[in-house]
Length: 617
Image 1 (tube, rainbow, N blue to C red):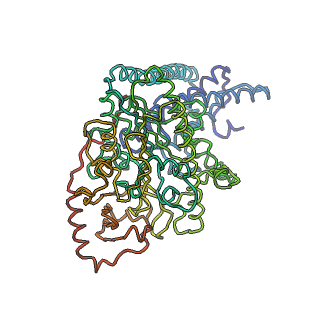
Image 2: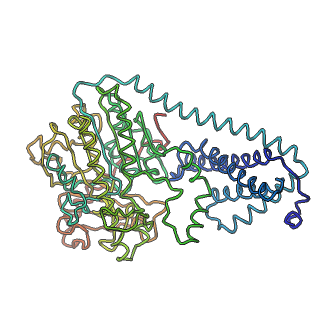
Image 3: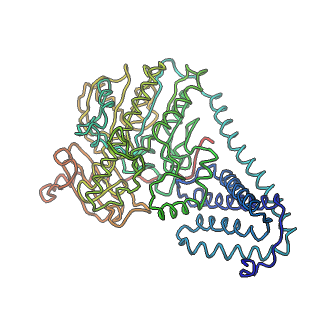
């Protein structure tokens, strides 16, 4: 009856193996279409995406073949139960599904119903064309399936082999290191702000382990990021250069122009490795992997590949919304602190033959970034389902923002717990004694404390700039020292090199000046600390950055902010840490003039760099 209604003609029988061949054929084509989309998006349009790694060129066709093959097997089993033969017309549903998924990938803005209608029309026309050319269609399917399968196998093997060989060659060519150079462990807590940490006096006990660690560390009370979002902030921490000098933007990956900390440490005999949880702006495609011999971002497993396959994400959201459950993590790749720690410790175990070689390890923890997962042992919550509402989605809703802030603080406590477990394990392995540990964040977060902004990447208020900074080494830094003067994360590369006994190959003023000089002030301390934020393509209409590029300067207790429309604000960050009430500008003319002159001097730098993707492999 359906054949008659759709004018598909009489049923054309297919052998079961041919039916399964057609299923795999459509799966491979669908996956290849998704890989093409991902390639254009990442390497031509430079649009980073959570959904795709560089493995997509082979993983998407493989996932499509497996998924459609399984569906074909289920359909054949169903036909056997009802004692029906497989037919060419039944492949209409496979063609429809593949076309629909590709439409959802390539044109996500099209409504589901429109994609369904268009997919149905394309599939019907395809069946009408092939019904009288079954032999030719099957030959094409065999050749294309064999060809694509060979390409998938070749690409997957080549990429895995290339990375393995790249690591092997890099380690073989690793220069000898000077004796007693310390290991270096850089922990970046994505989106963690200092004001929500009990380490900095917050009333909730969010970081009890870091508080204990502070007794044998140097703690900086006012460490300031150079921007309020991930990529340029990480680029600054890796190079010592300000965002004004870097081309690392929302749709532009970090370019290869400037020497990075990982690159220089490799030349000094360090084995370098990165393990990241932020799969958008710290993945390989971000450009931050440059200089790392070993770098782990997206996990590779067949179940995860199938779950993340193309338009299934859109269909998943539609189905979950229909059942009132949009909080499921099905189909979303998540790497939490235990995953990051396990990957790092496994890598350490695999280098047992190279224990005399110092390592530089960079760990990026994504747990404090929304969506937030309630942790029962920390917050008393009764559910482990993530809360998908982002702070930006709760703008103007104080009740919801308070809920999100509590969950966010639970995530910080979760990080504190697992950082402590990591350090304990390193101590048990006898590594902590000679490891320089640097704990900081790329930026903070806002929950509407001044009722003007939430989240990050929207403003340059203090809550998104003030980050934790703890430096630990039993012999190279003092114990129990707290530095109250504002400092910038741009000085971290120079600090790490100074404490590691290496030449000052990267720009910046080492923070060891605070204890090397007995805490005495010097002229360098008078230089204001710069932060910059450029408009992003996804900023909501209320975001302050919508008026154009925002720049800010901090000197002492004063924070000067200039917006894209020329508006200026001045705050006392000690007396008003949430920056709820700006100072009267009419009585601060001299101070304003000084900040304006400093701003001109600080921003007269032309950004350089190609912005192309760069990686050791």
